[in-house]
Amino acid sequence: MHDDRKKILVVDDDERHLELARSILEAEGYSVRTHASGFGVSGVMQAFRPDLVLLDITMPGIPGDDLAAFLLAEERTRHTLIVFYSSLDESDIMRSAVNRRVRGFIRKGDIETLRSKVRFFLHNHCEQAMNEAFSRRRLYAVE
Amino acid sequence: MNELILIVEDEEDVAELLRYNLQKQGYRTVVASDGEQALRAVQYGDPDLVLLDIMLPEMDGWAVCRIIRESERGASLPVIMVTALSMEEARVQGLRLGADDYVTKPFSLPELLLRIRRLLDRDQALKELRTKTTAQDDSMKYLVHELKNSLSLMDGYSHLAQTAQQDSPYLHHIRSAADHMDQVLEQMSVLVRLERDRNALERRPVEVLPIVEEAVESFRGAVRDAGINISLEGKARSAVLGNATALRQVLVNLLSNAVKYNRPGGNVVISLEGADRSVNIIVRDEGVGIRPEELPKVFDKFFRGTGVAGVKGAGLGLHVVKLLVEAMQGSVSIASSEHGGTTVTVILAKAPGAHRAATPAGSTERSREVQGHAR
Image (tube, rainbow over all chains, first blue to last red):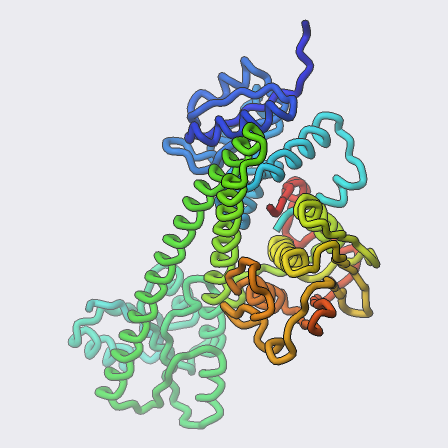
């Protein structure tokens, strides 16, 4: 049977974060794939074709912000929605996001934030529904 | 030693005299004979101090001083003005333009050397302090990040365990402790940054209503648990000159207090009122209130009211609110009566031109699409 669940790829060097994100997001009805390294992400994206990628920033070897810049420059991966998933200081995440042209971020913290932000990103991106809420949000979202 | 001193002097014999004596003291020297050369030397030579003659051909020393101060490299570069004019006016002008010190021609060499040494020592001490401060900031950020990372795991997994084991009260306590630590970390990182530098916040036009709506939304769960009703009134739509992250934190702190200190079943009302040149954000609760004698102290660091036994807190929430609001150049006030609830009013200046909110200065079309979210 065809699986039409939305697909989310979570990239984080910490397995515990991957497991937590998987548990929470699968309970929300998404199909989740995790990847525990900054290396090999574009290959996983090719195979899994996620609707959304959650990308940790502080990873050894290749930091998430460098990785994002790379993925957004590659023809094969540039059309996928990538957002940062990090517990860094909000202003630091925001700066990285703006610098690397990443379209959003989710701050690690409480799981309600994770749930609602993922819903928000998938809804707004996938249906291209630039509803009023979204366009209003765009105005203030960047510092 | 071996600091590099830039001598800006168009009279060759004076320049030579300075160069000879400074080198005898062990300094390295470079001479510029006009303003343009001087500015180039500041830009590329990386001098440690500038001896700047006022009477220069073409561009005078004042102009050079002003340009040095405006450049990134020269903002804190020690500058000693050398002026033949012993007039007070000229000296004042030099100091006003950012010179650190001055000597008048004809100058006494021992005095000049002493002034140079003193200024260089002071600059060195400042540089060391800045390095130390930056290192401390980095350590603080690292600490906050690492702890938050672990706390988010504690919070998440105890939530999952709670779901799996049908609401163990032990897990509830673990979660609330993790949550408290998380909030303290959040407040502390704001505190450290703003105590260091009150101008650390960038101010930009920010649309208030969506941030308020989002903050109210994020409290839905908490108010449901506490049996409290939260509502949003007077939805004036207006952009203020502020900072979205700071505003979010202010609202989270105020709403968190209004929920925490409310009476069971009480109301929290948040309203937005647009005034002529400002926007008022008012948060009202129906809680125990604050004793009149304690009211003047509520914005103090670590202050905790005595009428709130049994409610956890670190005494940072309102203090951080005040710091953040003032960093946005707004004001905050509080009114309360015992058992009559508390009202906090935040006043922020409207952004110049309402339409400006749609195009924050310096942001590109793409960057405006980034989505932020407070926890």
